[in-house]
Image 1 (cartoon, rainbow, N blue to C red):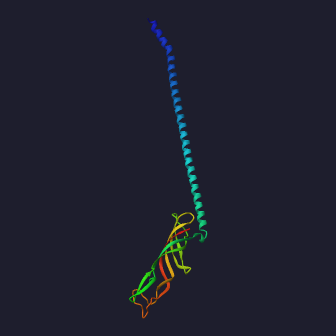
Image 2: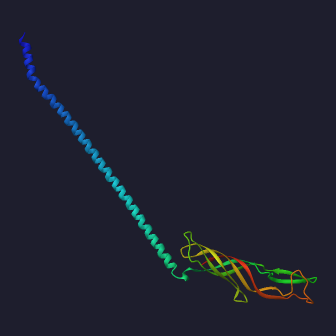
Image 3: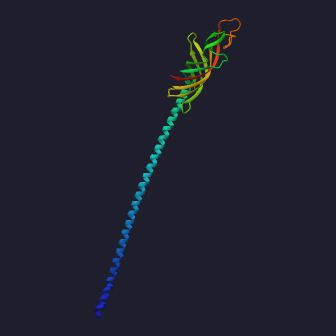
Length: 237
């Protein structure tokens, strides 16, 4: 009876170190597995971070390339515009334009422009006057510079060809122009002073709606230079 407990005790003394060693080995193995798992996780995170860094660097490089390309394009376009502007404005003749248009002249002289008149019961009556006259004119203008919207301002001279006279009227004024294309074609509006060198008016001493002077029985006319205000609409070619 005493022998059996002793045997158990002795058996436990001999087997305890083996069990302890097994437990330690198991613990070490678990720690090793855990360490390996952590190492793999850390490596995966490092690979992911590296990939994201590479992707970010590529995106930044692409953005810089786009910016550089756009900057180069704008610089090239600006250089072309400057060269074009210099070539167009190299001489005064490059800024001259010629056009044809329709004008309307309003008389600004003291006397009426009379085409015909008659005497009715001794009183002078004007049958037809021309204080407002539409015309087809030829014009030349000088626009030194146009803004970014293709608009500019400059002086103009306009001529009306005549039937009996080479020039029937001359006008000078200012013109506002809208460019229609890069070739310089434009639509123009001008306002100026017009001179008509051969305008027919009532003769000296004869006044509309008044009796003829003295013993005169017929209406006399004369030609003189009269002045007016011209509004001009033209287009270049």
